[in-house]
Length: 272
Image 1 (cartoon, rainbow, N blue to C red):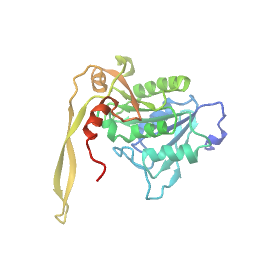
Image 2: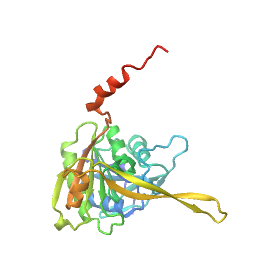
Image 3: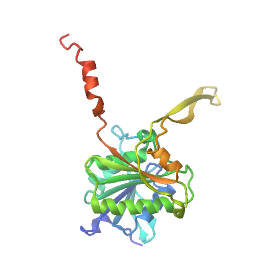
C-alpha cells in the first residue's frame, strides 16, 4: 500500500503531529495515533529509541538522522519518521523541515507512566508538547498512570476528546496542557479535574555496583515523596480516579517573589 504523504493533505484539514519519549515503537504512541484517526491528517515524528526523562534536551553537537518508518493505523498506513534525537528535536525538525507546514496541533504520548508533580521537569513527553508551545502550536501531553499499561482505551478516548476541543478553541499563548489518565476502564472514570502541579521530590539513592573487571558503576534508584496534601493537585486527582488536566506555562518566572528578590539583590555592589 502506498505510504501517505502530508504534502497531499488538504489545506483545510487539520495537520496533527504525534510524538512521544518512549520511542516510535512504543505501544502508547500507536494507541494515540489510532485514537486520533480521522480527526485530521496525522503525522508521527518520534525518537528512534527511548528518550524517557531527557527533559527538554536538544541535539546541538551531533547530526540527527531521520528514518522513514512503517506505522499502521486503523484506516491504513500513517506517515511516520523516526529521529535519532530527543522529543524536543522531533517537534523542531517536524515543524520546520519535515512537514509541509506547521502542524495545527501537537499531541505527545501516550506516555507509559504518569507525568505528575516534579516528574513534569524530567519528562520528555511533556517537553515535546512544550516545544510545540514554544513554536506557537497548541499542544498537550497525555500520560497513562500505569508504568506497564496494557489497555490504552481510556487514555486514547481522553486524548481524542481534548484534541477535538483544542483544535476548535485553541489554547492561550504560552500554555500547554499536561494530561494524566488513571489506570481504570473508561466506564469507571470518576470524571475530569483541572488541577495544579503537586509539590514533590525524589529521595534518590545511587547503588554502587561492579562490572566484571571490578570497576565501580552506579545505578540510580529511590522513592517518590509527595509533599502536597492539597485536594486540587494532579496527584490527588489520579488517586481519586479522575483525569488530571494541568495547564503549564512557558514563563517560569516566580512573579509573586520579584519584590523579595529585588530587595535581596539591591545592595549588591556593581561598581567593583
